[in-house]
Structure formats: C-alpha cells, structure tokens
Amino acid sequence: MSKGPPARILIIAGSDSGGGAGIQADIKTVTMLGGHAMTAVTAITAQNTLGVDAVHLVPTQMVIDQISAVVSDIGVDAVKIGMIGNAATAHAVADCLAEISCPIIFDPVMVATSGAVLADADSIAAFERLMRLATLTTPNLPELEALGGKDALLAQSFPLLIKGGHADGDDIVDRLYLAPGQNESWNDVRIPTRNTHGTGCTLASAVATGLGQGMELVPAIERARLFVRLALREAPGFGQGHGPMGHQLVREDAMVAGPSLNHVTVGCRDYVASVSFYKALGLELIVDSPSNGYARFEAPNGVTFSVHHSDNIASSIIVYFESKRLDAWVTELASQGFAFEQLPQDESWGWREARLLDPAGNIVCLYSAGENRRFPDWRI
Image 1 (cartoon, rainbow, N blue to C red):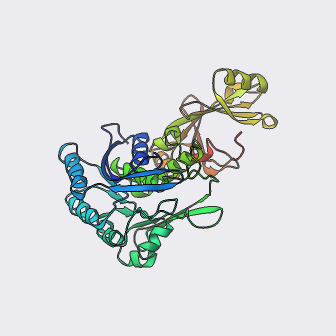
Image 2 (cartoon, rainbow, N blue to C red):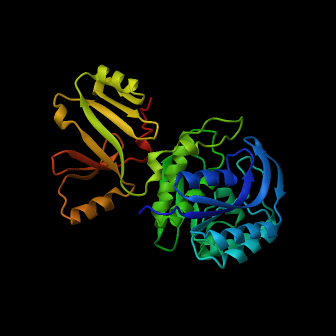
Image 3 (spheres, rainbow, N blue to C red):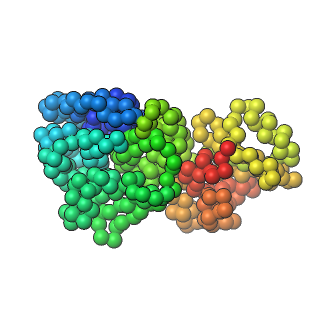
C-alpha cells in the first residue's frame, strides 16, 4: 500500500456517550488504521456499560445535510453505516448514497449488547434498500434473525458477513457469503471478557477503512477481525457491565497491510543478565522461559524483541517481517528468484514461517502470527 492521503471514511451512525460503541468506536478504529474519519450522526444516546438510558434521533434532514457537506467538499473513499434510527432516515440515506460510488459497509444495528432495541419494525424493513447498496452487510445472529434469516437474505444476493459471537461455545465462527462458491469462514477461540461493547461497530469500520485504502474484501476482513481481537485483549476494564475495548492500544499487529518489520531475535550467553538488561531499557517482559533460554519483550509501540540462549551468538540474529498473506508473498518472491531455506510451514509456537538469507548471510524470517505474536498462550 503506497503512502498518500489517508482514506476518507464516512461514518453514518449514532453517538455512544460511554465511548464504547457507535461513532466513538468508529472514529477510534478508522484513526488507528490510518484513515480519516468523518461523521453523519443519526442519533444521540445516553448510555454506559450497563445499557441505553435514552435515545434522541437527529432529524432526517440534518443527517442528510451532514452527508452532503462531507461529500461536496472532502470526498469519500468508503462509507460505514451503523445505527440509523428510523425508516425515514434509512430511506433518505439510501437515496443519498445511491449517488455515491464507493464501498459501503452496512452494520444493521438493531439490538445493543445490553438487549435494548435500537430500531423499530419499519426501520428494519427499510434496511433492505441499504443492503442492496452495500458492498457487505455485517449482521450478528440476532440481527440476522430480525432481517429474515440467512437463506432469505442470500436468496436476494445480499453479500453477508455473519458474525458468530452470539452463538454458544468456546469458538467464534464468522462466515462470509458473497456468491455460490465464494464463501469463506474464520474460526477463533473466544476471548473470555465482558468488555465486548462496540465489537460490531469496530469490525464494520475496520473493513470499510481497508476497502477505502484499496484492500480487497477478504484481506480487509482478516485485518479487521485481528484489530477487533487485539482491542478486546487490550480492554481497560471500565464500567460495571459490557465495557469498551482498547482501540488505542492496538499497535503494529493490525495496522500494516503489507510486510511489517516488527520482531528481532538476538542470541545471549547469560540468560538472566540479558533479561535484566532489556528490562532495564524499559521493555516489557511478556514471555519468560528460562528452561528454553528464551525471553520475549514488547516495546510501547507493539514491536517485539526476543533473546535466545546460544553458544554461537553470530548466527543467532534473526530479523522477522510479518505479512497477513504470507504464502502469496513467498510465492511471489520465489517467482523472482529468491531461494528459500524453508518454505512456509506451521511451527509449534503458533507462527507460520518461511526463512531465507540476505546477501550477507543474515537470517530473515517471513512469517504470519496475528495476535499470537503479542498474546501467546504462555504470555506472562
């Protein structure tokens, strides 16, 4: 992805006074992923981690005026639609967006995590127009049921990303339905946390940002899912109920679409001395395995660094470049004549790695680890 002006992401959604969901979560997500967030506020809510106390809908014309102001001057690279509020606004937004040519992600917000209903029956019926315009609609399971169910929506050729967080079980499965033969799914272990407020908003905004930045849909979804999972792990624990996530603490892992230099391993002869040295420099020790002679540290920007006991220090330095689509990257490099000492393979520590040497003989590791890089099972 070339550097240039940030992608312009228009968010059409409600405001969450608690800062966990709605436009607050959307703005944080777009900003952390390198986009420029713009908003058309559809509703003002009084809410916190315990639930929604009050909802005040913004007049339909004011919603449209916000959209028009942004489009006419700044321009838009992608749109994320969240809470609409009523049928009149939904139809007006559909009319407005029909004139805009860019990716649209529609998160059909109807029921908050607390169970409060955020849209009436007429609004739900009006959502069909928005779904016809959308590049992707991202319902959770209750929203999917309210919209008529998977089969009914697929029969109308609506592209869907069905989020499985509301299902029972230790795993969460998200399923993408684009067209017959164009389906994908992702399965991850559920993160045990009560701080899940704003997950749907965050995911949809992250996908919209990726599309606005020129990413293809599947890589944009993969990055968005990783961003959500890291934000869940970084949740600050605010409030007594479903707390906000930690968008502001997601670092290198989910920001970069292409190769990311984010890890280096060096050798050490005295494990205890090396661990003490790097802790004194201000790095956080996140893996401490004296029996394996291995320690991993994390810097404040999310980059990780490790030491590994070795008698041959000179051959212990390994530089790691991560890519979300490792196999395709290695295939491309191999076609250019690069010779690999190890083609991509799954390692016991949870990373998928390929290895080669640079012209000076230094070990270079190309890998994919996702959240496991910063949050392995054995993290302190």
